[in-house]
Image (spheres, helix red, strand yellow):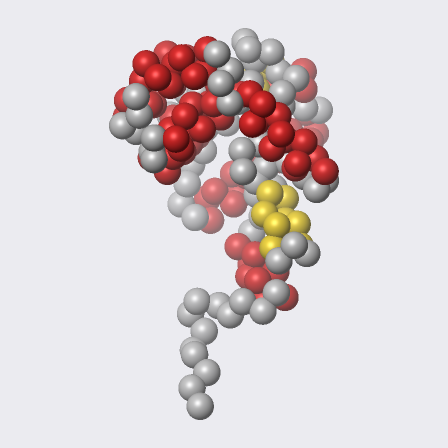
Length: 173
């Protein structure tokens, strides 16, 4: 489900230090970098928070075209790997083209806030579930795991809901 993390951020973005207290930012960045390194990723952290609504709108347009996965991956690659501002329409043009999405149609959908009501409804739904961050995973309508968490936490939650590990031997009787 799409989730607009900071809808209060204006279109031009805001410096991270204006939004996130320095001690919190340092802890969060250390945790993200540690988890990323464990799986061989190097993420580019941004000095400005962006308004994610344009990127979310572009992704929903891509979903209509059956190109969501390609657009989703291209957006993440642009933001995290390339350090690009995915709230910028020119960047979204490039990302959409890379993902095989109709660029003109995507631009029109973003400009008209075509998916605005849908995004607002999804945010309200998440807030009703007390989800206030990303990523957020709900397991078996019982466990909520929010934020970047180590893999072993997910393994423990899955074990609690009765899902066997993929590498566990099958019970043969």
